[in-house]
Image (tube, rainbow, N blue to C red):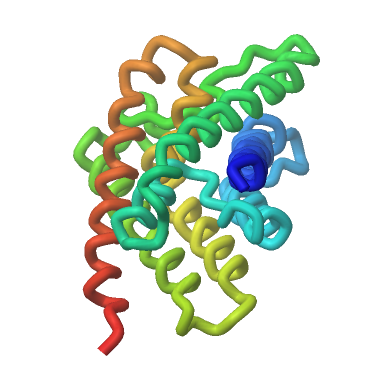
Length: 235
């Protein structure tokens, strides 16, 4: 029985590792490799869609194994909302971060393969490192609110009373919309694992500003978990 439980836990953690790996490789990879590719670059809309597609594809391929959180903020928000076990929280967060770092490592190898520098490597930033030069307050508000709304979508779409089979679509499109709004402000985090992975390779300013992209998504997720507990309470 104990061995069976251990195998089930390991399957969940591997699924989270692979899912987060795909999110970072697909999302940040599209930003680094394809966003500004001469003449046929995918731009902001393409990058936004890429992030959404990574989540949509993993929800339907691995969601039945681990729940497809792919994001420490999502795991924390689900825990606060009463949807996720506290004993699984830290292992999930750890493998999400490791999956993101592994993806960033693969992306680094690919991106430097033609002699190019990695540039900002799709790292998140504010002030002079914001794509639109938005200040710290704008970035903080943006990340908290975007993560809050993303978690409300997740909590609502996965509610047992929601239409069955459509959660992945709602969540994937929700993340796409979040990116369409916030890429100009912060390069869009809403995911501490995605921010940590890119910052480790950029170093310097990205590490100095990383606190924002760990703290703000967690705050937004906690608020969403609290709000949906009230909003989704059965009469």
